Length: 142
Image (cartoon, rainbow, N blue to C red; front, top):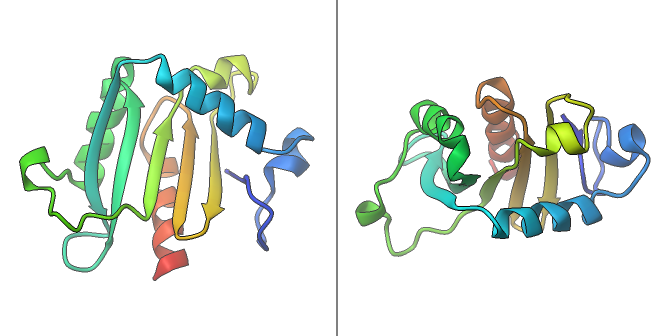
């Protein structure tokens, strides 16, 4: 886990670990996602009635990741997403980047923006990294 933004933190920054700003990789990730068939689903991080709205955007060929995450966090069926649903956390899943950019290491980048906690999941499993990432967003906005 690294922090991609320049806000104060006691965690390691993307720039410290990788020697560059995160912004260009963020944009490259979006460009890559635009070329993929995607899975998107909403959930309430922390649980219904006490959490925050969140979404996952993942390539369809990483459906096992999305399914695992949906089982961990819950999922809101499309027809049940409320009119006022406003995501405060987004998980972007781009597992191939672990091979193309991170020497086969699993990396999760937290990028805190105004009113939004972005998680860039450059890994192949939804376990601790996704749970901790969501908890990070909850702690931030809690």
